[in-house]
Length: 339
Image (cartoon, rainbow, N blue to C red):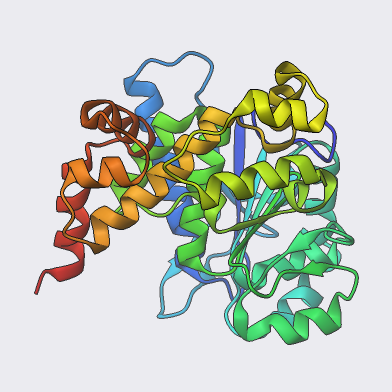
């Protein structure tokens, strides 16, 4: 599998939760619970060829003590796993230097081998350092916990560290700065692998309010550097600044000396979305913000984001958010203002 490929379209058979000394239990437990919820929904929906095995693996089978006195008992040895599709690398408590030294000859080379064999990696907080130690982040975008940013930059100068981002994606490597960010990253990964509907179901199960879309918060290496296209960037900027208007595609294509077909194909190749999908996404992001933070009527919000037909707006919003505008408003208002 190419390093540039994400998990999209890949059949998942096995997932490894790496257990390691100093780990924050929630950084492993939360992703595992979300993955288990996804697997349960797939079974209920009788989706074929989607069942996968989740194993907690460690260098040895002794119970590991976590912060607060809890213990985790690994299911299996790391060395017994010949192949896995996803590795979840947990966050480490405080300075990760000791854990890195202990795992330099065990977990680190195992991560490297699995990645080179096609595995994806979700690394949380200071656990990103284990991936960096394997050399997998050299020249790639990454983030880590804000308390560790300066030390990480000194220890791994070849990494394209994104200090202002809580989430990064570079090919098959996904980094989250914190446990809460890891939940967003898992929703994104589930979306890539199993589709938006399943991802939204899991997201709503674990969080009463709908989070902002992954794309609005992530530093995406491929989008940031591997597809520099001023034409597409200018179209995206126009959409962002003219939310309620419709782009005059034929006039723009004439101006750029391209056919409308060439322009639309170019936009989708770079952005991963059609122009209509990109515009709908922006409009729904703005609508969620207005529903959450203003007392505007749903009809007025629909008009503000470019929909003259409130029923059509409702269908579009439901498709993107998994619920009606009024249901979304009720949820987030209850979350924000309850005593």
